[in-house]
Image 1 (cartoon, rainbow, N blue to C red):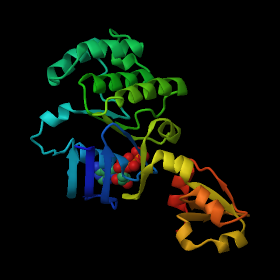
Image 2: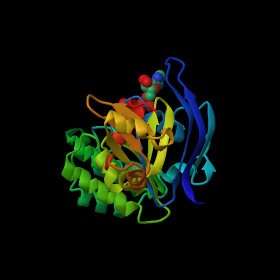
Image 3: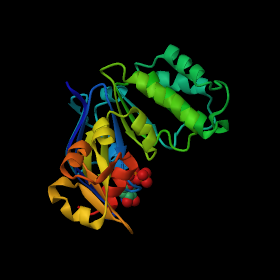
Image 4: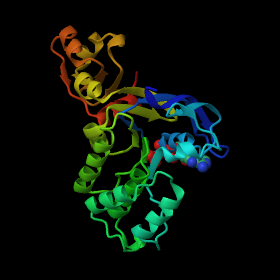
Amino acid sequence: MNHSLEIAGLTKNYSNSDFHLDNVSFSIPCGTIMGFVGENGAGKTTTIKSILNTVKKDSGTIKILGQVMTDKDIGIREDIGVVFDAASFSGVVTPNKLAKVMGGIYKQWNQGFFLNITSKFDLPMDRKIKEFSRGMTMKLAIAVALSHHPKLLILDEATSGLDPITREEILEVFLEFVEDESHSILMSSHITSDLEKIADFITFIHQGKIILTAKKDDLIYGYGVARCKIDQFNRIDKADRLAYRVKNFQTDVLVKDKKEFERKYDGIIVDNVSIDEIMLLLVKGEE
Ligand SMILES: Nc1ncnc2c1ncn2[C@@H]1O[C@H](COP(=O)(O)OP(=O)(O)OP(=O)(O)O)[C@@H](O)[C@H]1O
């Protein structure tokens, strides 16, 4: 098995909404982190819920760790750790109590690991969860998700609303997790700087469609944005631009291979491009 998650031709319509997932396909190689980005309402959570089988897909295939998950597959759920934006633990229990519950649910629950990671995160084990800050609750959710030793970790906005120091601590834990080659992470996030730090691949989704999947290093070091005056823009072959956006005095052009582009188009300045700007150009720009 080379991929921990394989999604092919996934579609999903909601009966009471115009939104639909349209032929969503992407895969996560084992031992890697896939960043999943897109604007509000692009379909990230719907994709994640389809993977987890908590919303019923209309068509397509989803393989988790080489297996198609059905309603009856309890076993495979042991191998998936999930962290949603709003952690959904009962506020009246303490982490110690929660661990007992989780120990009853997951065969692979590792109490030693849980105590270790909660101590690393400095979480008070006998305090009610309703008294926790958002950062503490998210750390607890991550600790719980990791303590049943999943192979695939699915994170939906797990670092949103957290300060940079807490995020850094959490990102380190994610990087440690994928040091084991059999582990992988799908991480949806609006904080693209977090993904720039730790992701191996990025998948962009827009209005229910995948618009790009690429290696993060190719995006950061290979892709670029050419800042063009109108005459420069007119010189560019259509095949050499992925998207462009006309601004007041210049046109920004997203290009796939910065060096090659500079070689071909003398005198046009090409800047490095961030994941945010790639998304902006792909979503707001023209092709
Ligand atoms: N249960 C539902 N019934 C009807 N429509 C839904 C349902 N859940 C989500 N939607 C719609 O599906 C679209 C995609 O929502 P989704 O939560 O997947 O987006 P997202 O990319 O995760 O957004 P965000 O970044 O804001 O969390 C939205 O238009 C939303 O209103």
